[in-house]
Image 1 (cartoon, one colour):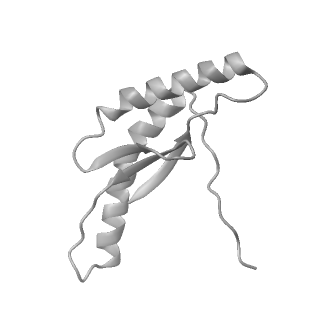
Image 2: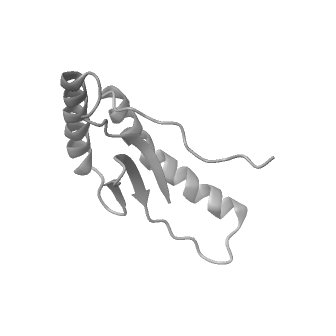
Image 3: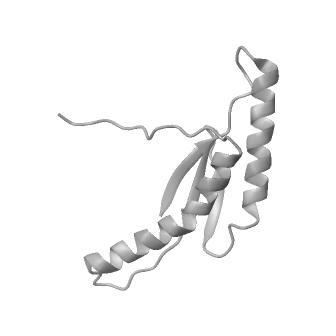
Length: 102
């Protein structure tokens, strides 16, 4: 399972000094978070500067809806502390992209 949990700000833009400071703070927060992401969980910095949290989960087949919900719930519980720490560090979070079929 994976979730995009934030984005490292670009150093380009109108407020160069502010952008550099936000970028440095974001990277410092990521570095601090990289240690606790042990076991099957990991953080990745994607090429477009998004931050991904990934965790491997196994489900015996055939899987029931309850089995799947249990694994998703465990993933979200693992994810929660990372979201809290990124919010404290004021790492920008972007809305999920996508399209809606009408």
